[in-house]
Length: 393
Image (cartoon, rainbow, N blue to C red; front, side, top):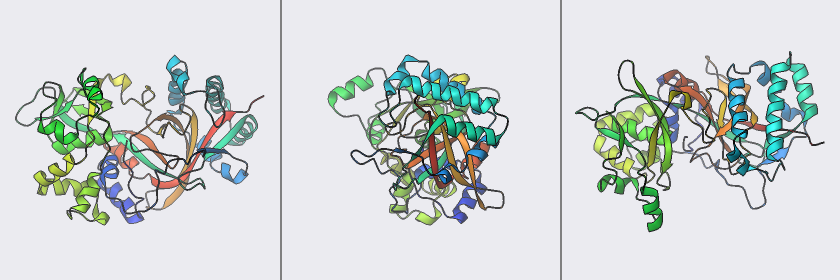
């Protein structure tokens, strides 16, 4: 999932949309120019959610019902299946709102039945507000402001065996590496892994572009095209537990780009101009990601262990938000005239990300490939985040 950057101006929104490039990677590596602390952690005793009492806060329920995605039910079924696994119980009981595992599952099942069985938005809103307590995120600023971005799974050419063109590997996690370095008290950095060739023999797949390799590390997953018909699906399995450093920030700090011009396109251009310099800057990002291959029916995989659903899965900080449930996201989106219009949609809180921290950040999964990247490019805005739980008897 992407690292935090800055909310782009309208002109920058148009640029990202027009490039058709990987928005997630662009947003994850660009240089920041805001002082807003979107990743602000909760203060001691502070809670990420508060109960909604003002009716105007519920704006968007009608739109979310009328514009629900076709794949919403599939995403809800995947979350219900997650609740049926014993491992999901470790997240509950949730402290605030005080909710048990049983109640969280019952809430999701009841919401699914309500959405599937209600004929119109008026009846839906009436029944929902009568049956459910509704909670709003406090956001990064304590007033409910959440900064939303979007992410997607890119596609790149690759080969299972190296050759003169495909010579840049992704690595699987060696079985003894975690035990070895945890015992030593420190994992190696990205630079140390490359310099000392620590992962030789553990290559998973080979790409033809070192920047693509790096972007997969940022993204956490990718569809790799092995030829005309064959594909390989890789996803995150572990990191070396070092902090992430933005490549965009480093490019700006080195004077190779200005904060205003940073985009995926300009980063690629900088890499093509000075591959050795940009390659050295990549090594300053100490975090390194290990991957494994997934079956197509299990890829891309959310952090809860269920497949992500395009347009219906959300990533949040699972240390501050209760996982697995239905949420409402209300944000402005850029339409074809480049004008922001408010929209609302229901999503399932199924994923997390290394840079999605605190109550003020959330990330929407838009799907796989270039078109999903264009959709993701329209999501960079402040908005509201609501959670729903059945009222207690």
